[in-house]
Image 1 (cartoon, rainbow, N blue to C red):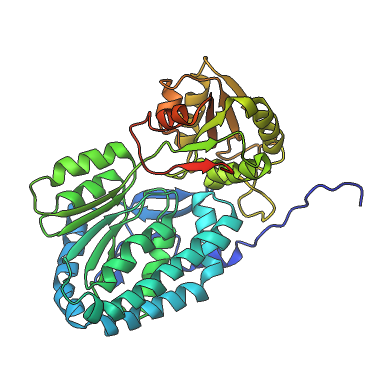
Image 2: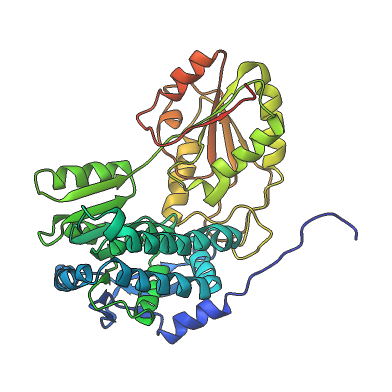
Length: 423
């Protein structure tokens, strides 16, 4: 062996691509237990290559109306089945997800650009665990939650950073409690949701209980405004969340929002520096930094800051960026060229701090961005305040615990926080 460099370990995409071919590479909407005929709409691309994976249909108001009507018709019978009967369907779905885990992981990686290791080892296992858990909750509903009833029809809008996992977060608890759903996956990442629709048919989920419509933000707006929907569940940007809150105010709709973040990652001078750096690698460069609770704002105590930054830069240079289907890489592709432009502009517009980008070889095509560290920014700097949603870490120092708390709270967000200390 001449070197200790990692070799490649590619995962085959053949099974997932064969499924797309079998479906004709074109998809309609899943309404009332079956797929509608495909129509022109938009394409879903592999962000690592730019290759077109499939053509998806842009939902119209008529499609949304049909999906809501189907869900409304199915809901009373679905609720009346009782928790134990609904649990059997959810257990069946969980087992089918496990059985198809490899295909789902590859399809997620192709459509989203995330490393196959993350899709295989984190996303998909969490998906089937959610369905198992909520199947158990359905079984307990009549004894432990006898005073609660279903809301009705749930309109659900999910993001592109964890496509199938976000579907599980929304769909599993809603179905367990006797609700029916109209779900819109993100425009960039609809393929695993459409595969999930096939699994619903295999599990025998009654027609109309799960409905999936594809399209852009206009389709989400149709769902939010629809009078036949009893609850909206949204995960996405804070800006869109505000719009949805205003739109639903006074409508009688229930609402849950899970929005953005600029979470502090605080390292005190008594912390195990090497462990804190490894934790930070996962906190900010997991899923290319496209995580709402990413530890994107590093606060490090002044006495260890230079040592910490030096070790962090060395660790950044060891990260492997490349083909998401290669099991040896750490950082995959960002979701879309437009997001790549947005990330690049955030960094290029920053003239105040010191920017370090990992010395890594990027693929010549695809939406790849190197792990980036920007130090020396003021607390009020735009990059310390705004969610970049990419592999960019911004950092500053503090002296006292009181200052660390003040800096951590100097944000309009409050989603998550991390503290490293031995005391």
